[in-house]
Length: 404
Image (cartoon, rainbow, N blue to C red; front, side, top):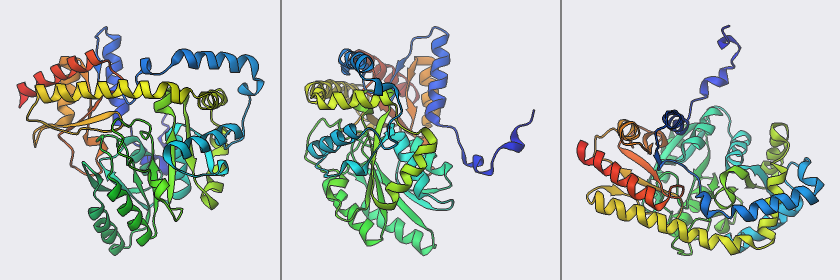
């Protein structure tokens, strides 16, 4: 049967994720019995998450709390929202009422809901270039046109941002918001300087724009420089926050949040209710008790030390094996961006690396909003072991030297 005639016109905006394609091929090779080293994932290390503690919490909650298997309010259980408000004030210096927090199914739903409420077909979203590919796809699937602003080692280039805004306004384009991952940016791994954060807020105020701050990696900082979150600097209510505990509890728990107010908050709740009614109840109660009982303080510093050691292994391996290559040196997050020589095809390189050397990486091009980034490769250090990182970079360097 031909189903094409039943598909909506809006479905023509839907595109597949490059990340999904990479993981699909990796899964096929693994089913053939091929052992792969993956430097592609966006997960925290499973052995750096206190799974035994989480298991005990889950058992206790399921046995003793009948509410753990029931629906919750759409904005999340009140106790968790109150605990998140205290958590965000302590670690992010954000003073927010629990009434302005909506618990979501991970950070992905937080971004999707904000997009659904804000974007009309034809609107322009300004994003970092490169930026997280799945978020770009989510905005494009809602009919937005994404315009990128170059990222360097200090984050989004605010001088180029203002030029972009002037250019778009001259063309009578409707700019809806600016999207940024200012800390541990995915895929670059860079962190926006405090000076640029302040400039970004000034520009948003000057041109009357909103900012969506994606804080997915705010709790993965390895060199604390006291750089404040955008929301903590916001004095006009321009910053909407999409946050998550995925890098703390594990990506499978699917607990995130939105910080919003006014009509945007109201519409987010209305939009969310028919989609999923509420975030996973058992995950909400586990997150509540994890924060309430001080497990974050007890275990997270140990995890950060483990991630920092993995990051250092990757950087040292790259410096030793590819001393002339250009790559980022993150102070937060999970990723290093490696740049192949100019003119190189990162898509082809990543494919050959997986097929012949059995190392999985993600080509950088899909993260870019234009035709740049063809020679970029995203590497993850949080998920693999230190031994896998060293061996993976060794094999990558063999292919690099062979080709270039």
